[in-house]
Amino acid sequence: MEPYGIEHARHTTAGPYSHRGRLPGDKGVSEELQRTALETEHVALGAKLGPFGGWLLPIEYQGTLSEHAAVREGVGLFDVSHLGKVEVAGPGSLDALQRSLTNDISRVAVGAAQYGMALNQDAGIVDDLIVYRLERERYLVVPNAANVTKVRDQISRHAPSACAVDARSDLALVAPQGPRSPGLVGGLFPEAAALEYLHCVESSWDGETVIVARSGYTGERGYELFVPEAVAAAVWRRLLADGSSLGIQPCGLAARDTLRLEMGYPLHGNDIDETRTPLEAGLAWAVALDKGAFQGREALLRQRAEGITRRLVALRMKDRLIPRSHSGVFSADEPVGEAPLLPIMQEAGGHYTTWDDEPDICGPDGVSTNAAMHRQVIELLQAHK
Image (cartoon, rainbow, N blue to C red; front, side, top):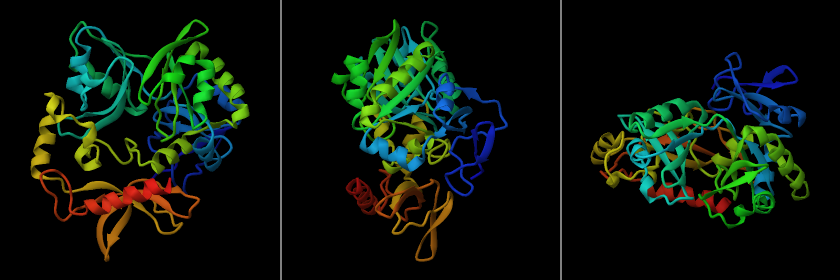
């Protein structure tokens, strides 16, 4: 991995993640970076800023481990405004999404949300994303920062002229995450109290429409608040003020990365990308092959029939050694794959990582002969939490 930079008071230092690590998606400090509407708030809080996905964002405040613990035990507050916001609205919007994405959006009720992927023609993962259904013919698609244009263009190619596909660059995205977040968010937006996981509702703040979603990428109960930039700073400050009695901590992307890795959530550009298919990544559960035509479907059907030759799985390290990105994985001195992910240090003394597995036998259903080992690893991860 190449080094990433952290800016703090005009200085750039080496990143804290590893001896050479940077957050996946970093395009380098020398490139033109987009700025979040909350940058002044981050600087005032002493955040260390660094590039990620073409944006200058808070990497950490007081430290990744303390921020990680705050989310697991109380509540943490993230600025994830770099995530894309693409609104798809009007006649034909459902069909456009069905043809562009892997999952069956017709099953998403108004006020609900769904995880899915956009694929290329070879079934490589262009991006993984969330689709929120705000109205019968109005959706909000949230891709990763680096892939907003690709996802928007893919949807546009399948959309009729009456369907509008627009990037919502006017929205900031603030994410309170943690077991104490319901009380915090419910104090600002009463509608949040009744929200189930992967559901959303439109509320308001100071006359501005706010989309309140019960979602997030930390594995904890949490919310994502799509807030107009004009009131983003006020909402951020209010959350910090009301959360002070709950032990709230502002959190950076480093903690977000360790949190999602601890849960086994994939990160596009790191462990999934356009060279890997959903079958290889273990994401077939987010693919609806029976819904009809969508981009990449034919390639997936062929791969399912032929069987996969590699698969992403999770491993738990026995000690506190940290495997570096792309470290080799061996079995009886034979190379069987590599570790594409940076791991997370656990208080129990181990680490988690993932690796590319090359199963010796793999049937048409895409399940390898070491599937039992995969299940044991998942059980270990769940038991540790």
